[in-house]
Structure formats: C-alpha cells, structure tokens
Length: 189
Image (cartoon, rainbow, N blue to C red; front, side):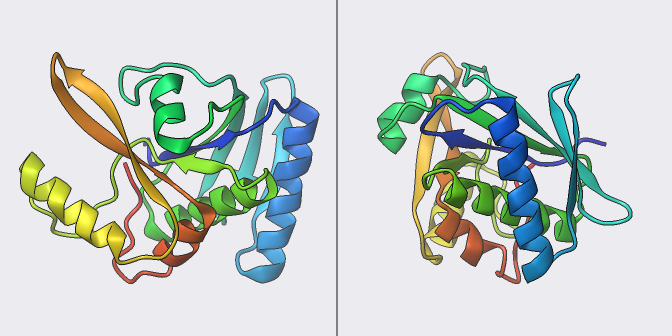
C-alpha cells in the first residue's frame, strides 16, 4: 500500500554519503527525543530505509529535483519558495497510519532544519478531517486550517488541465512541528 510522500528540497547539492549521514543523525535525534526510529542504507539501490516501528518503514531517496505532472516544475518551486532546489530528498511511506505519518513528518522537519532550513514539498494540500470535497470550498477550508498553525506555508501551483490549476503545500520545519501535534493531523496522501 502506498502512503504519503514528501520531499525536502535542499538549497545545495548533496552526495549520497552526506545524505546518509544526515538521515542517520536525524534518526538518532528523533530516537532520543520522541520516537525510536532507525536508519539503514542500501547503497547499491541509492535508498535509505528508515524503520519507524515494528510495522512501518519508509524509504529515503536522493534525487535531482525534477518536473512532474503532479507537482509542477522546479521553476514553480523557485517562484514560490525563493530558491531553486539543488537536490530533493524524497521520503516515501508505505502506510496511511497516522502515527507513522507523524513520525515521517518529524523526520522531514529534522532533515529540513539540519539542511540549511530547507523547505518541504508535501506533494498535495493539507486538509482537516471532513473537509468539503468540492475544489473551491476544500481549498478555502485547507487555507483556513493551515493558517491556524505557526511557521511558513506556501502554495505551489501546478496545472491539472489546460488553464486549471491546483496546489501543493510547501512548508517549513516550524510549521511541521506544530502540525504534527494537532489532534486533527492527517498525512497528505
């Protein structure tokens, strides 16, 4: 089962060795402060596996930033965030479990903080539970919900059909810190 994913958009290029060191350091920090998370690397595949608990894990992949149909171009990111990412650290969870989602987002925040306060592209919008399903009311509900949390929240537009745009949230570590404590936290999927 696929679950949430997010990418920490780094301001500078990073080697795989630097990434593994960053991931291991962030996991050690989280293990001391809150959750017992452990990192192991599969260097041949270019993937770090992070074990969140006995039932959940996620992959951490280092890749160049790229254009995708779903999230728009690197230029879209630069226009919104004020910098063009040099490297993307993509975290992919294989569960929709809320506790595992919180841990994944805490790891994103810690990686972003340790990587020159990079921003995190969530690949979609944050919604509270029971948000309206129609676009206009859903977008208004999302905006009101995220405005109630401290930290930086940006909307990155992308085209879903000719002339029709939707958004993904790009957020700071400070926003994530507050969001994961919200009783209505739901991972972006």
